[in-house]
Image (cartoon, rainbow, N blue to C red; front, side, top):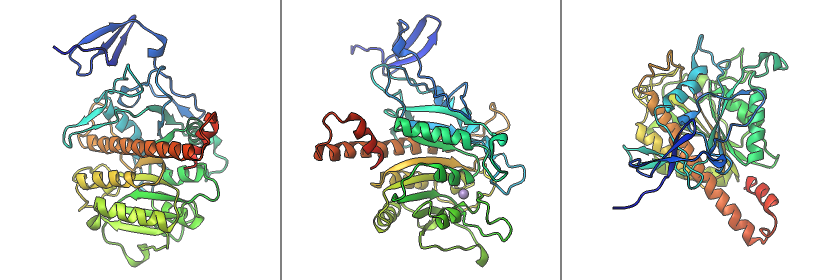
Length: 395
Ligand SMILES: [Mn+2]
């Protein structure tokens, strides 16, 4: 019989810490040890740490520093829907995730992973991630009434991500948070960033009264007109619009729901990368891009959406394009009235989030590796650990 050995730490009960082997068929008692204690989330001003993190997962002190940081932004001040509950999405997904526990690996940084038994894929296995908590809504700290109340927390999380060479993964909130994240994200003036957006709507609305305020329905127009991004690629658009609801801009590229395939997404993103000489990207996923039959819990559903598998494969394709993603978000899902009664469709939203995290981490590792290769080629690797780290950010 094959011998097994402890692979994952599954519980800490007083002085008896329990481990399991790779297949969870044998269990072991471990001596408590410093390197097996959990890494606490960073102490970020304006961010409240959570009691129970995503997937109940905490990396160990002996693991590498987290490279994906998850941040909840429970903000609904940018939506036109009266009484919207979209501020509750991050909590709803977190509560849904507690049903799928990730156990920290004892051997190296990493975890027991998640299996998608539909696709046969194993996800998140080597991803070093950490739940950083939830932005506080800090009305008193907003400089003017137009200022966003989560600015302090988001700014602290972006700075921490930069310090740690980590990617910030935000969960909204309404779609206006994408505008704030992209505006506050550090970017040198000569950088050309592309926004990759999955959405049923184009979010370029024109409204004679409110158009000066970036909102969930017009933030893309603001990003393009301010020049915060060089181009926006929208995927999954559908439905009827009147003439005054249409918008065009040289930097706005659209792939409708009817025409989206992984091949088309790769082709268009590669063309945009070359045409705009883009050197980085940001991914945003509006849950209304899913068909309302798959996920009805959005404020502005549009029917006849693509299949879940098609959207998932297009997200994977977008993250496989050779362009360096610097962050991502998921937005516009509604909150749930009770953690005990989360509708089954939230599993689908969480599943998409898992594919997004898995995909962005593969993208990150690909650029980390190629940066190392480039650095080695240029002969700057020797004794230049710190400066090499900085160079990675500049890919
Ligand atoms: Mn949207």
